Image 1 (cartoon, rainbow, N blue to C red):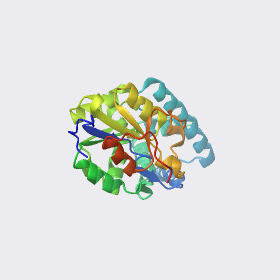
Image 2 (image 1 turned 180 degrees about the horizontal axis):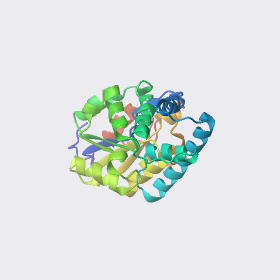
Image 3 (image 1 turned 90 degrees about the vertical axis):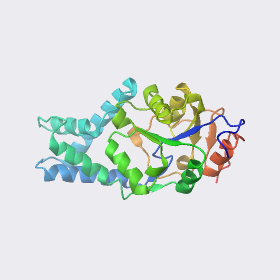
Length: 264
């Protein structure tokens, strides 16, 4: 596998994070909400948990829908602030008590995230032949970076683009441009591997990268699902390159370009 091979036009490989390189346990989101509520109560807020959760869900859905339409990233602090204000408070999203609650929320992810089997070995192998990058839709960038450190893969990436730092999220072309700039490569020479048909596959294709649909999490019915964060659970079509294992990705980069990968 050589990136200078005339059969292989790719000079860099980018990856999505959740449900591509890592998955999380089924209880993660419930644990995160429990920690968020506990942190707010420790800060002196008194509210009915059921009412707060309802308002939080409504606010999150509203902000995320706006984000999808504009391409601009949102942040959890806005959802928390809106939920608390609907319960009779008058707060700013920059209130330090909300910042503490955000930290508490994401602290549930670190012990619950695990690598897709073989991911570290795959990155180790690919790094010998290609510069690697990460492009993730993640509202709170410090948490995304801590997850990379926790699972031990941050060292493999030449460039890391996180929507919470960029201010834009996939499928907006700005984030794919930032990935290409991090590589110092033209977009047509970048392979992008992701699980979401809308943000990863369609987004990469429209921005001029070649997308590869990674279906490990879907095929194995991974318990953690991004829920309101997931853009599209459909099928991007038979013309899109698809892999369900890292061995299939190696075959693709060797120039064999299989359309499908047999189910494990």
